[in-house]
Amino acid sequence: MTRVGGKTTGAPGGVGRFALTLSTVAALAVSSGAQLKPGGNGEVAPRGAAIPSSNSDRGAEDGFDHAVHAGLFPTCTGCHTGAVQRGDALFPATASCAACHDGEDLEEVDWEGSTPEPSILAFEHDAHIDAIAEADETTVCTSCHTEPSEASPAVAPRFEGCTGCHAHEVEDHTGGAACATCHTSLATVPALSQASVDFVRPADHDTPEFLAGLHGDEELFEQSRCATCHTSDRCAACHVDAGISQISELGAWPASTFLPAWENTYPVPASHEASGFDQAHWSAGGTASDCSTCHTRNDCTTCHTPPLDRWYGMADLTPRSAALAPGAELERRSPAGHATPGFGVHHQVEAEVSAGACATCHTEDSCAACHEGVRAPVYHEPGYEAGHAADAASRFMDCSACHDTVVFCRACHSESGIMDQSVGAAYHDAEPLWLLRHGQAARQTLEGCVSCHEQRDCTRCHSSLGAFRVSPHGPGFDPALAQDKNPRACTLCHLTDPIGR
Image 1 (cartoon, rainbow, N blue to C red):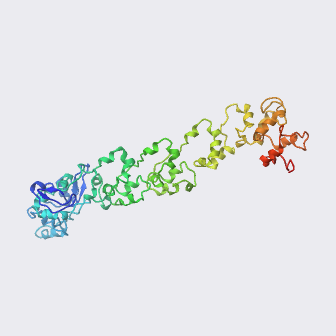
Image 2: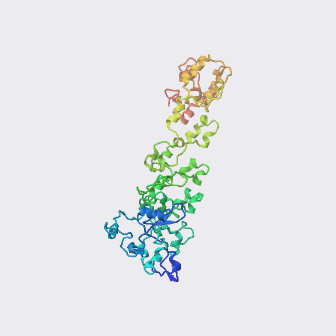
């Protein structure tokens, strides 16, 4: 409750019956609706009056000079009956002018009358009729309006005028109060001018953390406060998911109202700055709806490969073509591990352990570009071919991943004069009589042999039908034991069961 002139008024923010004294009349800065005055100083102008630069401007605009008619209408309510009578019009009808300006006694006038100006102030004269009836009418009117003897009663009531009677819980006009107590939502007021939407900017809007998260915090979000100055169109300038209820219920910007331009801003949340977030963002504990505030489905496809339904929540995001906001545009970048020296050559282990991880960003075409010889990446250091035999004969390097062993290897070896069936030291370990000692190497890594050799190269010596019939098995070889361990290994060389089981 609020004390006014020794009497108790209604509840804070409401209007009750109360007695006015001359000391408090000046505080009743009210009118039939108000709009903010340009400059953002919190001053307002009444519904029914544009914001004038001077009283004479207002008189010229309306075409009605109050000063000329002051002797005919000694009281304001002689014409403005709606200020004291519920249901009556606040402004007189244009036909009432003809009572005097009939073309005989006085010349006729072409006055179109006054119409209420659009306003976001939830003020109505009839809500204060009881207060006006208990005080001197003229005194109450001039609390907000200038003297009727002037050209036009200008109106510029201030915020402090309202709070002289109506309690306000905070000192700052825009700080933490229930805006809907005094204001209507912007979406319900058509035809506001550019000047009239130059609202006072609340202090909490300038804090660093406001845009990044506070303005959408469920515990702090108060829709009626936002709706005073904002419509869903303003949210849709940045929010990709502008269809959610918190935004759509604000209402759309009236088509007849000037809509100021707005620059899209996407501050990076602190969680996104954490080390490794880009590699583990899918497990950060958020939901698809959290991401959809700033990100479209297209942002995901910057890195992730289709089909999108295999990635958690990705298919639920709005495509960029269906959103008014552009969304936070992303740049593709490789994981830190890909930058380690030699990763392009030695990534086989990672690919075998977690092929699904590779498929997050890579398609089969990515692999085929190298592994099927579409391009020639520079894997080997200069002069590598002079000593490549050791790698070719080992398990470490799979030459056939990039090279056609029949065409590529033989073409080079032929040009160099290094042919198969040679017993010299031209290749393999560059030691003499390699052919007589190759058995151990073949048993350790047969895959290395097939990089260059075909089976018929082996059967020339090792076949039971060949000229030399040399057993490829080493000393002490137990065929039964070997077959028990891996019978399929025998069929690589033997057409039938070699031990006749």
